[in-house]
Image 1 (cartoon, rainbow, N blue to C red):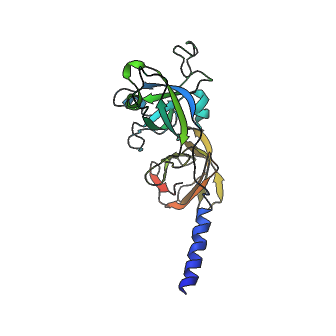
Image 2 (cartoon, helix red, strand yellow):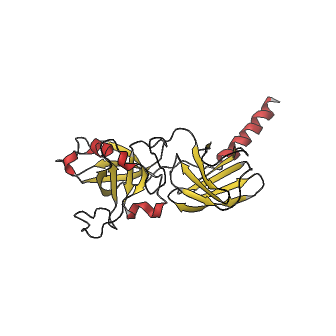
Length: 253
């Protein structure tokens, strides 16, 4: 009996893990530049093109950056995590080139009225990070303004599950997906009601995903795929009496 139970349990765990094979390992070191915005308390970084709203309450804090066009990927990079080091500028880089770890939460728009090497820092094809001021000051002096950096994609480490916040109204559901571990950036999403099959969600902007189906009164499941191709399924995490504005936690990577 005990052996039979162990075999069944092993089979179940194997099938669950098969939904999320492997572990995201990040990417190679590359070069870019970094500036800062948002003030000493990073209050000016709230909101942003990824749709996360209050970065403190969402768990991102000040460990954030706005990405240039070359890195932002039309919003699909929202939620991706990076390690940065200030390099090749001993006048302004802090000794020892300490690392910082940030999440992409905003877009740094191009400024075509300025040259790319003098004010138009986020102009394509430049790879550029506009950091929150507290993060910039961890790697460089305030007076530097802009510094060269080495960066790489790294796995996102988040506390708790992926969060799904449902906004909208009866015929318009806008699901904000936050707190994603692993690759961090969601590229596909689906919803399933207790009366429906899986339905794909359309990315509206940032990490806001849209469905025009009537989902009120149904318990809901979500499925998401990250940029590394791994998929996480969260079955029946939303009860049938859910209300717009509520947030529900699902399985993370």
